[in-house]
Length: 90
Image (cartoon, rainbow, N blue to C red; front, side):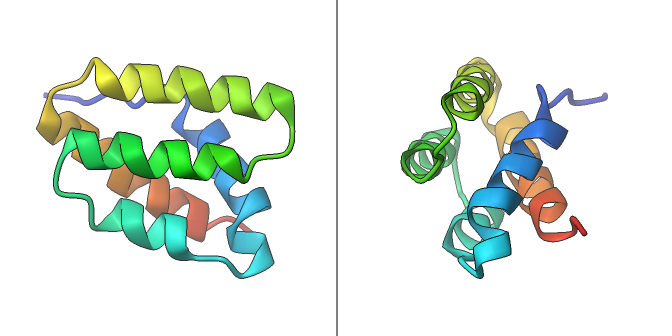
């Protein structure tokens, strides 16, 4: 069974540019340890607050919408994948 994480590369880049690049790792740390879909959505909404670009905020909102339509296990997989991709960018 393959899980599809909507636009995860773009969202990872946004998190990298707005948080990781600035040495702020709390969002990626929280995403890597989320226990449920509800927790993921809370972390992502916290992350949106720090995003400066309106287009990036729109992409983020679409990602949150996709997470809210997933089953818990798939959403957790996508959150962990997102954290890993955001941390591993060059």
